Length: 175
Picture 1 (spheres, rainbow, N blue to C red):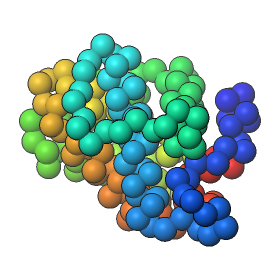
Picture 2: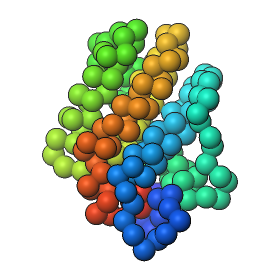
Picture 3: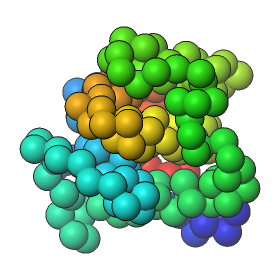
Picture 4: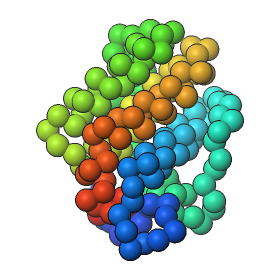
């Protein structure tokens, strides 16, 4: 929980101007970039590789890199509290990772459940952990193309469900 306190002032949006609210397009692009980085880090930690041609690592020292670092640290904290929740996600959901529709529908169903009682930063981190857990399962079962679908699905969920909430908070700022 100490990480939550230390990260409370983190600014995270990628923008040239700081005096305006981020647009929906910016928030979704940032969500997907964070998703790619988060998943990539979790795959590396699991000893797995993923070829993400559109993955451009955030500039070191840049805001997105800072936000991603915080997101990863908060994810570590949640995993320490509930280690079994974010591992073997496909098995827990009793799904096959050989169908894009099944995988993305499962992520959306879990996301709907996570946010059914409101939105918090902890729930946002949990969503990224679930997506990364599914990505690890997909790569382990020789379905690395599903990772792209999961990142896109994450972006679409943010667009449909979290953009207004994020915008009210100034973007990917940890408050």
